Amino acid sequence: MSSPENRPAGRWCGRQSFAVNEVLPQLDELLFSSVEGVLVESVDVTDTVVRVEARTTAGRAACPECGCWSGRIHGSYLRFPRDLPTAGKHVVVSLRVQRFVCAEGSCTRKTFAEQVPGLTRRFGRQTERLRSTLVSVGLALAGRAGALMTDAFKVPVSRNTLLRLIASLPDPATAAPRVVGVDEYAQRKGRIYGTVLVDVETRRPIDLLPDRKADTLAAWLAERPGIEIICRDRASFFAEGATRGTPQALQVADRWHLWHNLGEAAEKSVYRHRGCLRPTSSQSEEPQEEAEPVALSPWPTGHRFAERTRAKHATIHALLAAGHSKRSVARQLGMTLNTILRFSRATTPEEMFTGQWQNRATRLDDYKPYLDQRWQEGCTNAWQLWEEIKEQGYPRGYASVRDYVGRTLRGKPQPVGPRPPSARAVTRWILTDPDALPEADRLHLKAAMANCPELTALAEHVRSFAHMLTHLQGDRLPEWIEAASATAELPSLRHFAQHLLRDLDAVTAGLTLPWNSGVVEVTSTGSRCSSARCSAAQDSNSYANEFYWRDRGSSGHQSPLRATQPRRRS
Picture 1 (cartoon, one colour):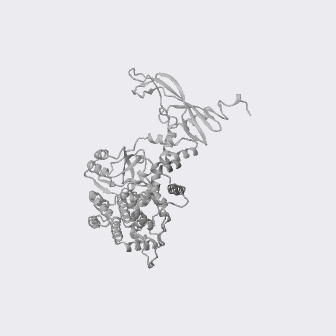
Picture 2 (cartoon, rainbow, N blue to C red; picture 1 turned 90 degrees about the vertical axis):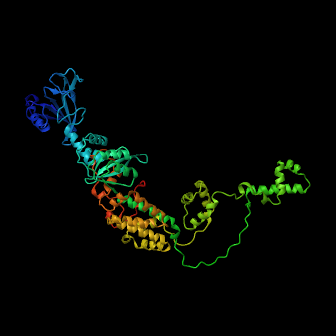
Picture 3 (tube, rainbow, N blue to C red; picture 1 turned 90 degrees about the horizontal axis):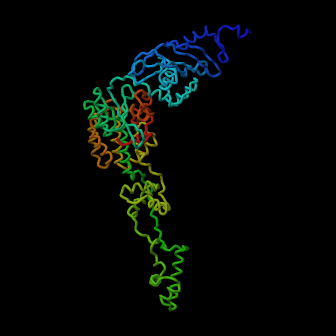
């Protein structure tokens, strides 16, 4: 092996040596082929890091403040931007850049550092090609998944770094939307809400508004007169904002919300007729002999207060029978004269039954027959019973109902037989396509409607609305509203039908045109979108929360009451 003195001109760099005259021009062309004014001086390679030492060769630079060119050098310093990895090793560029003195005397900057186009930027810690790679990863995978991917190719960054790089990108130029979807999104659920606007045709978010007020939406729409169709729910502030902002645009009420509101009205109607859900017994009931009422003493035997009262009563009457005066008995027993008088007037201890032992009237007495009836119908939930009588005007709290159920109703036997279906189950059967309803549920629904003609009428109205909705027959809506408004026994359904008249044009358009707010619902309920660069969800998920029959595109049908998240009434 030749000695170091006899080796060609080169330099020892870590564990490997490179011939400067041969390798550096190739590295310069390989690493900085698209960058002008950079000269590679050396490369140090270790087991984990590749350090490239380079310097700028520009003789002058333009001031970023005033744009004046200057060739007067003030000094230089080192920057260490990270670059794309090579051979599984981290690459760090040790770049010496120059600081120039601004030649313009009126400029606020006295000195400035040069930036290498395509390689560095102000306050940047990565090279431009590494930055563009991280931006691509962030746009494809977002925060957490993107951070895991950067670990795989040896450039680990946090999810916040990826999100910050995405947020720094300029918004892409978008064409003026023609069909816009409007919905709310929660910045802080239950407290702070905003408005999200989505281009329904391209399925991409357009803008986020800080609140959901009609004035804010109207101002945004007024700046975009090219909007022709607005897909929205039935919220009053969206309807008012759309009318004021673009009066020439056609408003389309979303079909999911219409079906959801109909489901709520149907459940309330079924709940009002829950007494008809219990099947009638075919067996004749044999008359039972009534048991003789047992005279229960208000003083339970063995109770310490009862026994003490009986003992006092016997002692006082014995002393009075022996000839003692009432004042003498009071002194002997350590009682007041009034107490001796009360005991002396009572012929039996039971006459002293007062205070906490007496069955005093309570505000629950008027509701006890209803509670007994609901208990016999199979409702054994004290909280549900309390909510039911609270709607009837019961002014007190839950504790009294709980105590009455625990002390009185728990001991009563319930009727033997099958438990009646719940109002929610019957509602689900009514809202389900009859062809997709299982045979057992179909028989249960038939039995329930046989006992209640109102439920039969409700099922007919619901299925008529579903047929109109799935086949986009909005011209039949006035006829349906007139028929549903005539059902005096179904006030919830009548109220729903009359409420449609307030927004008749938008509802008719929603039941006629193919437009809907499915893409807006996916955007507003999915991950937060901070700018218009965020793409909408995939087409396969656009109707993930749709529950009306045809648009779900599956054989299984569910009630809108089983939505994944509670929604406000629209």
